[in-house]
Image (cartoon, rainbow, N blue to C red; front, top):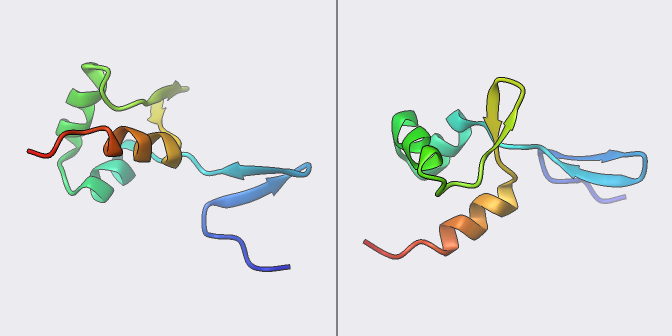
Length: 71
């Protein structure tokens, strides 16, 4: 069996992808956490509340990113 990418898990035969945190999104985009929170509040970044934290699927973040206009 080939190795799975980091953050990909198999659970009861279903492939699960680890959700990204605000810190990880900020690191990925190269922006401060405050910028990430501000864009979530404006409902631009597709985060979901999970308990007390925010999480986003990598694929949803990629779709959001691709939909952004170049500055």
